[in-house]
Length: 93
Length: 467
Image 1 (tube, rainbow over the protein chains, first blue to last red):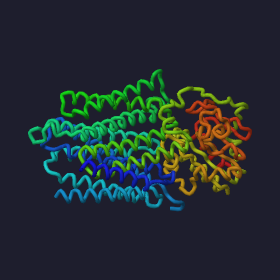
Image 2 (image 1 turned 180 degrees about the vertical axis):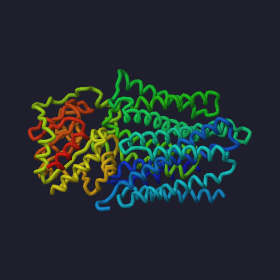
Image 3 (image 1 turned 45 degrees about the vertical axis):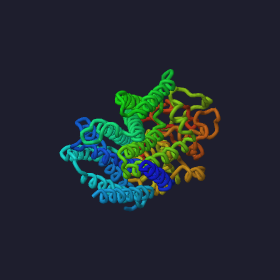
Image 4 (image 1 turned 60 degrees about the vertical axis):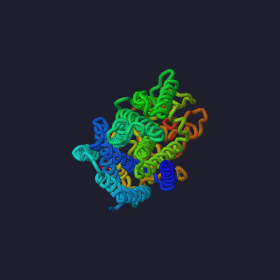
């Protein structure tokens, strides 16, 4: 049953995603890409859960490496997007 | 406690949804990015409240990753943006691969904690394979794309005999190993099969991106972006975590939409972009252009510009390579001071990633009202006195409109050849990435200005200031 629920969530968020971003002005293509790229770093949550004291050594270190990589993705992605969007200015500002 | 965590995940998902929605509109984009980052912080913080975490390693890992991410984001030049996005993408993919692997390792080894090896269900095994497969392809594919973008591996498409058969074999190997693993995730054979999937997926990422040329990079980058989301999504299925599924799926959808937009802007299908090896040959078919390229000196060009009242600038990857965006902005200013209307016409696939030119011009402080899209500029292009093409090639190649034999026939272009006069700034006389002759360069109203784009544009500005 849980599997079905997860799939249900998956399908709905897929449709939601398509509806949300159906039309994006081209000047926002790069920020949208790097901003959503930062969101894909959400996998850091899975990585944190893997670094559990009850886990064996190998999975802990795999999780640790995943935390580092995903955090680079998250922090770098959000910051660089913010930097980029800060440069998009209107005339006269 | 469990409920608090899950409620917070819902809140985080809502923040992601609003964040992405706001990212799609110019006025709200920056705020949207901040909102989605708050969602991320929330998701991470409540996860840290879980039982039994090894905090030294968890916080250490977050600290190390934050510092690296911080430095990379602060240091990067706007011209290096495509490389950085590709690199971040790859890291996200690898992280998802590792999460899938770690989860299998944990489940298959922690017999003591009551999670004995038989607990790996078929469904979990299948999504572990998916997380590893998508994550692995995303990782090495992005790394290879990064190598191409930074010029370390050469921008051209690389093809070799039997390449498609080789890639098909890799894919087949992944399917076989994946199925064997999924059907018996607790058997002795399972672990070697999983390692095989990891290795083959990493190889496939490299060989899939190899035959794709530099000009098709906008498609590849957005597709890899989509994949990094889907990998996170698959990792979410592995650990049965909703927020990973929702966030990963949103990213997957947005990346896919961008990919489709990019393909449409080239009038090609995704299959064609991925598998055709476009741009591998140095001279593609298509009628050879007739006529001479007519060079013009910077001085003469500036006289023509002085008389112009309506100018459009059409930037391409060459502007990024020459880092000419600041000089271009200055040229725009002196022209405007001379009572001339200046607009920047941007093709959706100009450059090496979606929106590449917009980012560069924004860095140079060009207000975005001055940036116009292809469809807005084409209907009135006959009124334009001078179109200045800076390092763009295929996106202004008239063969796309009128030569059915051309490989890029049907691709929408900016009709620079219909402007009264066209200046083409070009490094040398060679063909562009796709190896195609460009009839624009030999058109009667075209004048070539050879040399480094930045030097040329600065030269034009200097001429104006002197006169």
